[in-house]
Length: 325
Ligand SMILES: [Zn+2]
Image (cartoon, rainbow, N blue to C red; front, side):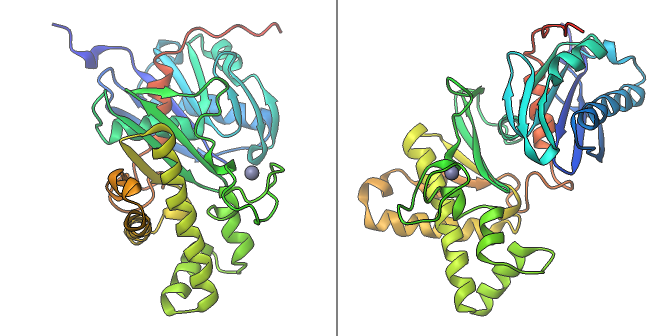
């Protein structure tokens, strides 16, 4: 019998707004090497960052990059996995980049590019050791809000890659206008940008400051934090009602305090369940969880879920079209 660990090594790269996290997996999915570096913005910067980490991981595993079985990349913005194109990655300062074809040309290896939240969803599915017939949503509360959905072990992108874009579901008809043009989107009440707008502070960690003030009894802080928790709980409810996932995993800076946030969200879902026997029958509090029980799954000290997920997604990469010039 051949040991699955003897299969080709695969690379996963998670390109974030400030840092890039990359891993090499053996054939059995174990992390052999991990490398983190600062992300350089702009088209040339992002491409250079990606090629740099692949070169570094090749050196660390004492092989040529062309010997890797595949490269998967998670990156913010609108991503077309079919063409490997990345568009509108505002925080990376790039408008359009043929990242997939450029990396495939450079290394001669199949490359798959995917949205970063989708990559994290696939990584979380593996880290949680979920059975292949189960379904999961990874709900990321960063600057914005979005979910990646994994059904029966495979990423579900929807017809145009918009499955899980719950941040732009309007939940408040009287709410403020969102940057997407709609009114009262979920992301206007529960996201990093919402906290920045509703709780302006010079504190280096605005979410922690908000939580601390709310815990001290500051009335305005309590109101804002209450709205954040309601927004997070609403996102969980939307995902279960629309996709009926077994598990909703919370991630991102907004939930980085871990257990206190999870308890508050479960408590809010429990309150709603007491008002509705239908909702109660869905057992929402039991479906929501954090990746490690506490702490943000995407924090550098934690599991590199997005890089891991990118590596798994890369394994299904087909050779991407070569660039013409
Ligand atoms: Zn919106």
